[in-house]
Length: 382
Image (cartoon, rainbow, N blue to C red; front, side):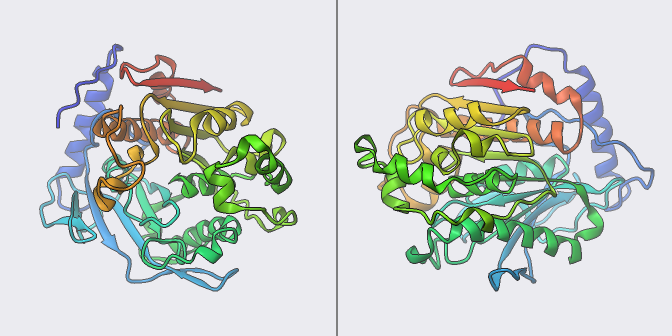
């Protein structure tokens, strides 16, 4: 679908770079040029010059700390000329990725992004974002957080997942280093994106200090009665912080509708050690914008960014309503068009990882000039 939202600055250089990349991607079979090159910049408003491939890994990541095996979904760049069967996620959600297509050998290893799904969700819940990143030259790996997914959910482990999930991310990176994809990945350029509990996970691995006392005090307030997070997590173990896994290999994070500000508070968030972008909707009743995203952004050290999406709810940033159906809470009519919200996720995930993983300063223009999308407000600090 042609994107109707256009930025005003001159994008002729982007067009030229994209054209050259298409030539490299589409000519000479599956192998890219052997000459080392810097990462190319492509228009983030559109899919990149590569097609996306998709595979369900035959091996699993091993979280040795908690004795867990994690199934993995993988997206990766393939030749722009490639053909084949397109994937149907979960058997009924049509995607654009080519199933089990051959990865395009790069002139320079691809950055890698890990996607962390939400509580009681699925690894493919943001397949559109994963496909977008793959088309722009990223390898994307999405683990299933076992015992916290839709198919094997264990409600008794919800609080434990505060510790387990960050360790899962380290396990995925370790797996990638030993996998068949290792030679295609730049292990100095790893990022993470995640939604809801995955948004928490994306922030947690960057090193902020968890302050369960702040969360417990917040939830004890009369004004917090009925707060979803308080009802869901209850009282937290005050000795949990030393168990949280800081992952220094993560160089940038994009957190969609993240839970919850009061896990960390101002002091805890000040310890984050990687650039973080927050996206949240003003109509989100699960992780409400005004008591979560707004304060998380304010208390993170720079560089940081905040995408405020007017009228978007909790699931607007995912395909979960396509999976669950309209009768589920946060899947009814939304003031924000869901396709526009997905476009926002795609554009600004590409922009943020382009700045901090590909190290291309020109992507900064997309943050500096603000948004031409009416429902989106951009704040950022460098």
